[in-house]
Length: 388
Image (cartoon, rainbow, N blue to C red; front, side, top):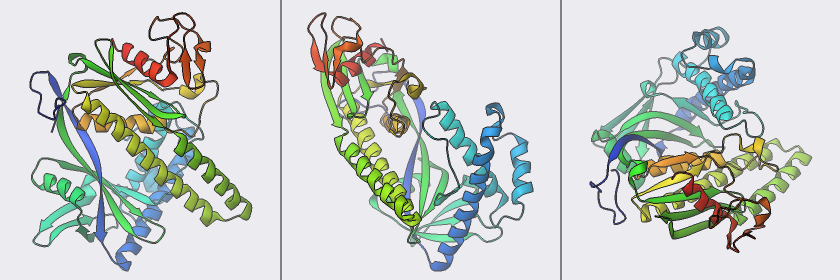
């Protein structure tokens, strides 16, 4: 897998570089009440430790929040030496809190600070999982309880079968696994699969796909070749906004009733719908770039977005959407570049004049040259020019 032209053929005429890709594959597990009980124990312990370290993270300097800091290892032994999960999994719970806080800081501290401890998952590194292939199919061994590994049969789907086959054909490798347990006790394994692909070098392709992210439109993508617009694709955010407001009202009712279970269901429903929305949007952006391949996707640098924006949208998952676009693009051999967002929404892409009054709702109207276009399309074109 790697860089391909617009016809889907391998493109050997342009320079490429090898990049790693990680895909999460959800595995349906053949399980039992006893195995589910063990997973529940592991999840509860993992979350307890992750929650503890998340709570103390604000008091720890950023430069000390590293996996190599022995203080974290010693603290795990001191506070959770009698934990029901293996010491390696307990350490991974602490490292998970570090990773979440690192992401929070690097994304400009959006909204409320991270809160861990109430999740329904635990992370196991490669050393604590083992995939096995036999005559009856595939199995997964999980070692998270001391001296008591748990074996699961895997009920494959065409999607998971593809990646499991690649692992055993040495075309890919595992990169850790999250075990999730749902409200009804169902257990699934979210396996990370890693492989390498050939990706175009960004400065060696003719087409730039500028992507402007927002709330009214989840994204506007514009393909530009030699200064000419080749195509435009927009995904409205109306449905997501409507859903978010409906769920907000539902949460308010649950809070008035003191219904904690209802609040948790609302949160899980929100998370599932948001994930689906981000997956759909990111897939659409990358498919659009593939249609205009060889191309490079150009995104805005949204670091500190909320600090520099007058009316920031605190729960709009810009960073998550960009991350999904990036790794899906890499898997298709499409490079991704990040540029400064300065004035992309206020600048006329035709004459270069800059004025915040050019924006009129969803329309962009330049009073200098008379150019009119959708405001997000104008911004997306300007984003491509920031990479010139």
